[in-house]
Length: 390
Image: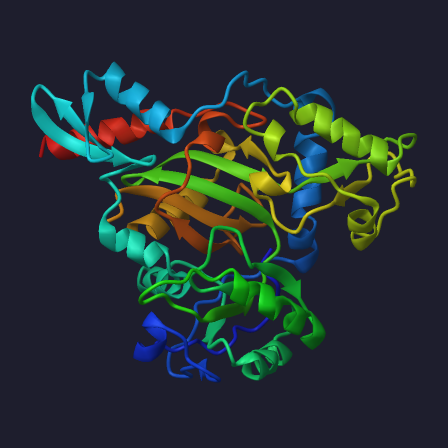
C-alpha cells in the first residue's frame, strides 16, 4: 500500500491557517518532519484490493447478506441500552439515558456522550487530526496544507513526490472532494476545484486543502470502543469479476442484483452509463476474461457502490493496536472509527491511518454485506455504563 516515496516536507501549523484560508500561500514548515510508514512492495500494495476480491468475494463466498429493512444508528444504540435496563427520555431533541433514575449519558443523531466536543472539533479537521496522530506516533501519510489560492505551490509539492498523491479538503463533507492517485500537474489542477467546492463553510471554517502521499491498499475501518477494536471492515469499491462469457453490462447487472436484498445497500447502487465505463477503460459490450477483476470506483463508500466486508477475526493484533492508538490520540474520544490503508490484514507493515471518524456510522459493522455483524452498539452501551459507574 504505502508507496516507496520519500515523505514530503511537513505542513506547518499556521495560526491563521488553522481557522481559515491562507490566500495564495502554502502552510509549510520544514522544521516539522512527517511520519512516514514503512513501505511494503508497491506491487503488493497496488494489487491488495484485487487480491482481496478474488479471495473473498467470488462465487458463493461473496454472497451479500439479506437485510429486509433499514435501521438507524439511534435504533441500534437504544435497543442495546434497553437490553441493559437503560431507558431514554427526550430533552430538546437529545436522548437522556437513565438507569435507575441516574443519568448515564446522552444520545443524539447516533452519537453518544462518549464523543466529546473537542474530539468532534479535531475530527472535523483533517490537518488537526493528522497532527494529533503524530503526537501519538501513529503512522500517517506525509503531506502539506495549502491555501485555496496556492495551486502552484501544490503542483511544486507533487513534482517532488516519487509517486501519486491524494487531494482533499481540510474540512469537508465526508468522502466529498477527495481525489486519489494524482500523478500529473494536469490531474491536480483538475481536482483542485472539486476539492474547493466540497469544503464546509461557516464561521471559523478551515478553507484549506491537504495534499498528501497516496497509499494503495485495503480500505480498512476499525471501530474502537475504549481501547479495544470491536469491529473491523474492509470497504471494497464497486467492481466486477469476469467469467469469460458475460459482458461488462451483464456483470454490472449481476452486481445490482447482488445488492438488491440488502436494505441499506440497495438504494445506494450507482448506475454507470457508457461514458462512465469508458472513463474506467471499459466498454459495455466487452467480455472480461474469467477471473479478471476490474475496479470501477476510486472510493469505497456505500454511496459509490462499496461493499462492507467484516474482517474482525482476521485483523492482526498490531493493526488493531494502530487503530486503538489513533482513536486514543483524539482528546475526549471514548469511541470512534479509525480509517486505515493497509496492504494486508495480518501485518501492520506499511499501514497508515488516513482519518479518524468520531461520528462514524454503526450500520456497516452491524449489517455488513459479507461476514458476521458485530454488536458495536452493545459495546457502546457497556462503555457508557462503565464510565457512569466510576
